[in-house]
Length: 378
Image (cartoon, rainbow, N blue to C red):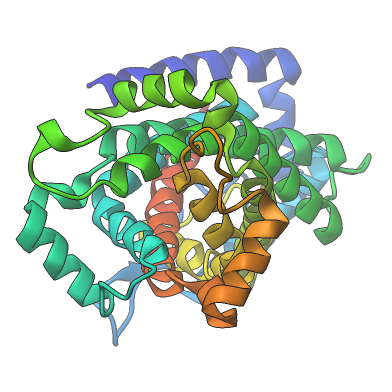
């Protein structure tokens, strides 16, 4: 009910904004004159059943026709049908919450593997078994509250800032080149790394690295207690431990993600920015998952360095911390554990991030598509 209320509020707000920007009647007249054999935008996307799949996915021919008609109308009107950055931000937050609840166990396993220096865990399956046997099934959702909150605000910021940067980087005709799309994605990644990701992940990792069933023996009793303890012992800057590799990781990740998502949508489904076409949820799952595969491979070393720095508490007086910074952590890990240690936890990252992004994009595309359809009907 809350989600529906938010969507209704968004629709009302967006409707008022669109009415101020342009005359919708004029836009439809221009669109009608541009469409050959059609008097209006397509009312909806038609779906066809594939003989080899039970999923109902639009055929390539239908996608192509819809995109050509929509693109012609958009070109004639001189504007896209896209929604505001605020709508993109809200759609991302919905997707983030659902992703966190589904994939938190994989994130816990990834963190434990990255922090394992003694070979306690023999692999992903063994790590799952040991956590469940020694700490209980609930331990697989350790750190869920900061993780879900972190993803909600992170995706809100990511989607909103990316849409804002893209709008500012388009040329006078509304065209966005691949290079500028990459720049917008990198900028969104930097913003989320500094403002959201680093402090939330510091708390999440400190909670996840704790082992044992007896809560009274754990240093951190919960999310807020963990944050308070870090600030008391290490100062506010302790919440930003590992911010350097986090910026490098998230900037590169989002640069790859948004660029790849646009390319996959165009290649597989014939969708272009602002053409009015709404992807089927199955299509969003496929394109979101494929687009999110490249980032983890490229940013594996950054993620390992970030995790080690975040897990490292302040050194006692008279001693030095093992990792003194971003580059020093990379050198020490390489020297002590070898080059392949720089990609520790890559498999669970690939198990978590592409499916997570598939879920997020499925939700986000449907929220944005719902608002776009309502705007088109008015």
